[in-house]
Image (cartoon, rainbow, N blue to C red; front, top):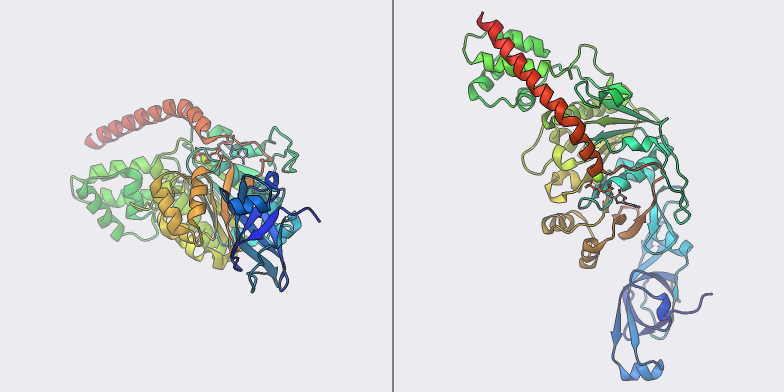
Amino acid sequence: MRSALGRIHGSATSFEFEFVVTNSKNVKRGDYIKVWNDKDGWVLAQVADILAVDNPKLSEIYRSKEVLIAKARVLGKRESGKLRMPTSPFIPGDNVYSAEDSLVAETLGFCEDGVYIGLLGDTGVKVKLNPNTLVQKHVCILAKTGSGKSYTAGVIIEELLERNVPLLIIDPHGEYISMKKPGRFKDNEFGVEPRGYADKIVVYAPPSSPFINSADKELSLDGINLSAEELIELSGLRSPTAQALLYQALRNLKDYTISDIIEEVENIRHSGKWTLIGALSKIENSGLFKSKPTDLRTLLLRGKASLIDLRGIEPAYQNLIVSRVVSKLFELRKKGEVEPGMIVVEEAHNFAPEREKTVATKVLRNVASEGRKFGLGLMVISQRPARVDKNIISQCNTQIILKVTNPNDINAIKKGIEGITAEMVEEIKRLPTGTAVVVSPELDVPVIVRVRIRKSQHSEATSVMKEEEKEKEPVLEENKEEKKGFLKRFFRSRKS
Ligand SMILES: Nc1ncnc2c1ncn2[C@@H]1O[C@H](COP(=O)(O)OP(=O)(O)OP(=O)(O)O)[C@@H](O)[C@H]1O
Ligand SMILES: [Mg+2]
């Protein structure tokens, strides 16, 4: 047995106690400790705080000028798979010991062959989460920019890919493409070897993407039965007259393509129709809609991650792609035509914002609330927790929170996470990069995790964005000129 860290002092309950630290080198805030309880055996506790006290009586007993008192929070003991609190209080004078890794892992409920996300606090205990809970009950990763959200999402993606879980990654910055390549470092502390996933990741890009040449496959949609709201969002059509004409045209159509709508609008006798025809032609010419579109079944395949690279795509088109692809996959999943899997949504505040709903909000909400029944999970990632649809966040049973400082985001986290203490909130404000508070239904108590090093290469969103700006701007300008030219030609031909 290791030597004692200290001795219980003052009044103790079965939930908390204080101990005089006799081995000050080995006691830190956050450490896991154990105490023997005659009724319950070894019980796990955690050091919540350490105070230096001026107490002559204790100084005399412990023969030290400076006396340290540690406050401990009892975590309990695992019994028949459940964490239980001891039924009787601890005894003042009893010794407190450092808890061994196996006791910590067992008590906190880590799953032996689970998804390995990192090491627990300062310990060498591997935090492993049950993959079924993680996937089916949804995960959110929230933190301020640069704190390690995408890095952590990459860690989970690696683990799920190794378990052959089908994944769809919505990647607005193309930052997960680098996962094809192995990481540069071998790491002994976390025990991971570099590894690339080129055999498992398939990159898709829409035809108009500036990055279409580097994608593995093109992503196109059928454009059948686009709703008036979708068409208005895509075209940015503001004119109330043109919008009214669109609703009028759609009333007469059943199972239609964009060409069918244009044909219908052409028959309307109203001068306002030209604005609408121009807007609809712009959508038709985006190249996204094809008569032989991508078979969306191929986006959720066992052992594969389909990554949709949305760099350089206008936000309205990004939203439409997410809405159409996710709703189709959900339908297919309900019919059992694709396997259970997970959809990863980066920058979720853009696709499902708390205010101003987008065309993607409804379908993401549906998957969040009903996906688990059908085996379709969501991983939602955002740097602005307060700006993501609350219904979606509240459905994420596993919550991974890295550093957050914005008071609105802190409030959103306080409201959204059950069992989060004021101390945890203070901790979240100060977390170093790559360290997360993890809350999971499997764990009973929130834990602090040093997210493990990546096996595959990580590319930071900011640097990718800079690259994207360089490459995107000229193409988009070109597109604008092309579109302007197209509209001029279009109107000329109509007039003549
Ligand atoms: N667990 C980790 N281990 C080692 N380094 C890490 C870890 N997490 C993050 N980092 C470092 O921090 C950088 C920023 O991480 P990341 O790109 O994941 O931030 P982010 O929260 O996604 O930021 P953004 O909001 O800008 O997308 C990484 O490039 C990496 O160098
Ligand atoms: Mg990121």
